[in-house]
Image (cartoon, rainbow, N blue to C red; front, side, top):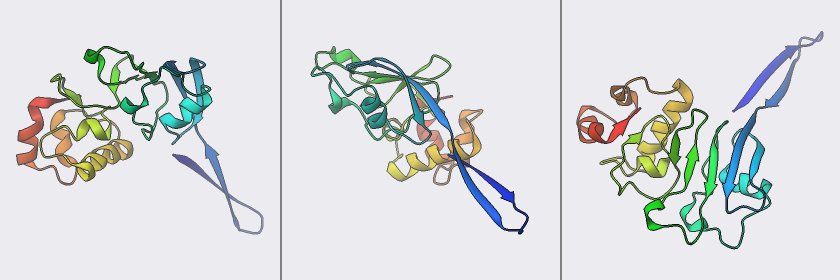
Length: 172
């Protein structure tokens, strides 16, 4: 997100300045330099990996959504090729210390946190395809976190029937 700052000059013209916001993430796992990475808002996992010196030869990027947009305060774990099958998904941890699954699927039956889920994760819900998942994410960005699971019905394309189909699989 860019913060727009307009300043009126003596000539009554508008001066447009863009102020970029910083995003701080903690990158761990199979990267050359684990640690805190400073990104600009809107940058993605691929950018964080690049700033961490790239991956090691043991990294399994087939399980990472390199296009996932990172948020401030997240921890990103890049999995190892030998990682146990139980840990099929790579993990992000948000600023509150809660894990966020970035890729893979929901075969383990975990509830999907609609305030933190990625597009891929949202698409595991019955009747939620790519466009609906993106609308959920956009609704979050625009309006903030959902306060109750029922609030997901405010998203275009999620009516009462779709909500009934997913309500037992979602949480906030």
